[in-house]
Each structure stands twice: as structure tokens, then as C-alpha cells.
Amino acid sequence: MKSQDHEAHPKPRRNVELLLLLIALTIGIGAQVLVGLNLEDTIDQRYWTEGGVQVGLALAFHIALRLRAKYADPFILPIVVTLNGLGIAMIHRLDFTNQYDGVADRQLMWTAVSMVAAIALLVLLRDHRRLRQFSYISLAVSVLLLFLPIVPGLGQDIQGAQVWVSIGGMSFQPGELAKITLAIFFAGFLANNRDLILLAGRKVGPLTFPRLQDLGPLFLAWLIALGVLIVQNDLGNALMFFGLFVAVIYVATSRISWVAIGVAFVAVGAVLAYQFVWHARNRFDIWLNPFDPEIYDQAFGSHQLVQGLFGLAHGGLTGTGLGSGSPQVVALANSDMIIVAFGEELGFLGLSAMLVLYLILFSRYMRAGLGTRDHFGKLLAVGLAMVLVLQVFVVVGGITRVIPMSGLVSPFLAAGGSALLANWLIVAIVLLISHAARRPIVVGPMLNTTGKGASGTEDPLRGRNTGEQQPVSESQGSATAPALKEGDS
Image (tube, rainbow, N blue to C red):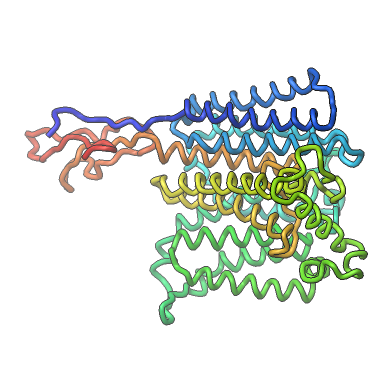
């Protein structure tokens, strides 16, 4: 038996993150310079200034992690910086066409705003478990954000979907922030009611179905998703919000019956939407018959989808090269259809590499959630991971005709301030959860169940002993054992 406590310290691995950051910045800034060379633009001070801004922001975020969350996952930030940098490079490439002049500068500005906001969240929040106190407040905020675009005088109808809000000449999508607040509500609600949902229910064959009163939150989520679709013609967010809840509740309960109920709700909603919502019916018709001349030529027809398919085909296996294609032919090439732009100029191999980056990022989000010791943090990280993967699936699936197209955009790649801000805030939250999961755990003395501080376990997020964890003296007759640290055999 050891005479003194042994303390195992997991490695922070911030130096690994710094090395990967340098590679990520080289890829992003190098892509932008390569665009300029291929388009015969002068590589002047403007290029180096924009590159310096990206370097400064990435290093500032890295330093914030060293100070506030040094045990956080070292791979998340470099992957996000790579995707964000490639997005800026492609938007810069499209700025050479008349349709998109000046968008890259705004994207760089929103990148700075988003990263500064994420750093502020790291500094001010510090402990992700504080968000659990705002579970029901988050639900109220989510409903407000989702229906804000239908308020007269605020909402804007763009491309047939009313998801934008204009205030003071600036437009943003409140639904982008709603995906964070909804994830907080779902995680908080299920963390508080998991035992009730697990214990109550009726068994039908191999499946255990919940009670009707326990279906209330799921039914509420279904109504919110359907309401968003009907009122705002927003098929993508409706699918993402509902998929988020079904995924989180499955992780919380491990019951396939919830997934079956969720699929049934989605099927009913899809049938109702096709019957009564023109926008949804039009999306389905475009998906099924994109080459029909009547559908191709109509307003909000299949022209965008068909041009995107031709762009991907033109790129082939290796692509035309950055700056050598014609991505501007596709409408909204720098936002909704930016995946097509990358597919044309980087080819199947380049686009596959970017999708692999998304896959790795999703796995690191999931790893942070599965590694944390509190149930709320676990569900929140898994929920935010599902938000990421559902966005990528809906965007890529719509462009490749796997599913009907929607109005979602590719995380960190597409032009748009509200989406970029929301995704960087998600990064900050997941990094805090990852820090809590990987930091050293401090365990107090092992006592008998009647001794003082019988629990023997200190708050894993603090890293210091409390008064209740002091060993009981031998004169009290309690057996004591040396403290166990994470990593002891």
C-alpha cells in the first residue's frame, strides 16, 4: 500500500494542438493564396493582412484554452480552423465573379466576431454544468427564436423560406442560435427525468414504450418542428430539431422504441407537409423529378439542383483546381451550394477529405460527451454532435439527391454570420465538456458507509479536497485507505 497519495495527470496536449493549428492555418491561407495565383491576382499586402488576422484569432483561441481549458480535446480547434479557412478561401474565389463581390471580407469579419464570442464563452462560463439551470428558460428562448421571423416587420422571405430577421439593416437567422438552446433544454430535461422515463412504461414484445404522459416533450418537439416547417417553409431546420431530440433521448434511455416513435412522427409529419404545405410538396417534386422541363423552368424549380449535379460531375475525381472551375453558375454558390463549388474545383478526392474532417469532428464531439462524468454534459455534447452531423447530412444529401434539398448550410464553410457564430459557440461548449472529461479526477479517502463523508468522492470539476473528505482519525474506529487517483492500478 502506498504511503502517500499518487496523482495521475493526463497530458493537456496543447502543444499537439499548436502543431496541428499551424498545419490548419497553412492549408486555409495557402488555399487563398493559390486562388489568387490561379486567377492571376496580385499577392499583395491584403493577402498577408487577412492571413495574419486568421493566425492571430487561432492563436488567441489556443491561448484561451491553455488558460481556461487546458485538458480540452486538442483536435477540435485545428479541424474547425481548417474548415473555416477553406470556406474563406472558396468565398474569396467566388468574389472574383460579379455575383459575389466583397463577401469574403464580411466572412472574415464574422469569423473574428464568432471566435471572440467563443473565447468569451470559454472565459465566462468555465463550467458547462451551469447551463443545466437554464433548461426551461432555454425552451422559452428557443420558441421565441424560432417564431421571431414571422413577426410582422421583422421577418424576411428569402428563396421561399421565412427564416430571416432584419433589425437595423442587419439580417440574421435566429434558428441558428435555437439549435443551441434546444440542445440545452433537451439535455437538461432528460438528465432530470431519465429515471422516470426508464422505469415507467408498457412492454410490447421486445420493445418498451413510454407512458402517454411521458410522450409530452416528444410531442411538443414534433409540434415545434412541424410549426417551423408550416409557418416558415423551413424543411431543414424542422428535420434537424426533431432528429436532435430523438437522438438525445435514445442516448439517454437506450430504448429503440423511442426511435420507432420518432420515425413514426416524422412519417406523419412528412405526409401532412406534402399534402398541405406547397413549399414542402415542391421540394419533394424537385427531388423526384429534377430533369422534368416543367419543374426545371418553374419559379423555385430544380435549376439550382441540376446545375449543382453538373458541377459535381465536372469536377470528376481530382477537380479542376482552385480558381479554374465555374462554380458561380450555381445559385448561392458561396452559401447553400458551397459543397458543389468544392466538389467542382477539388474533385471527389478533395470533397471526400473535407467530409472526413467533418466525420472526425463529429467523433471528437461524441468522445467528449461519452467521456464526461455528468449526465447533463454527456447528453449536451451528444446533442451538439448530432446537430453537426445532421446539418452535414441534410446539406450533402440534398445536393446529391439522397433526400430533398433544404435551406441548411455547411458548418464553418458557407457564407453567413449567424450560422458561423452559432457553430463557434458550439465549439466552445464542447471544448468545456471535453476539458471536464479529460482533466484529473480527485478522489477522497475510501471510508465505511457510516463514517464522516462516506461518499468519498469530490466534485471532479474542482480538483481540490473538501472538508467532508478528510479521513476519520483512528480514535474514531473507522478504517481508512489512501486516496485513489485516476490511473492507479
